[in-house]
Amino acid sequence: MAKKNQGIANYVHTGGFNRLAGRPSAPGSWQPERSSWQWKTFLVISGMAFLLTGMFFVIF
Image 1 (cartoon, rainbow, N blue to C red):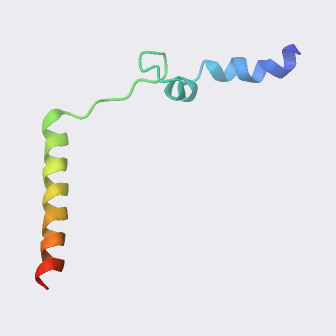
Image 2: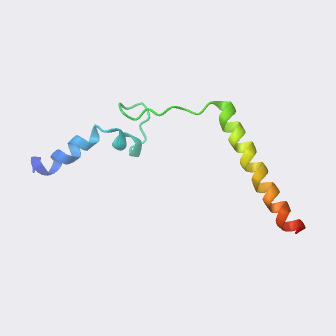
Image 3: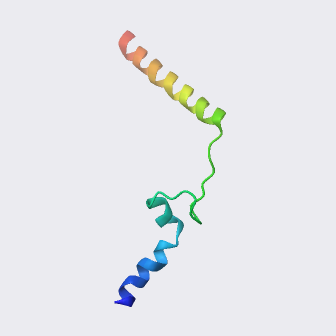
């Protein structure tokens, strides 16, 4: 029985398991955060593309 759980025990300590478990502070699961201006710029560009595409199909 110990052999069966050994693979799970090894996996528990990996970053993949920590991300699945929702533990951002666990070892191996750190990910850099986007800076605020990059995120806002992405949202503005995406929003403008969405609106312009919609207006194109309404007008033409």
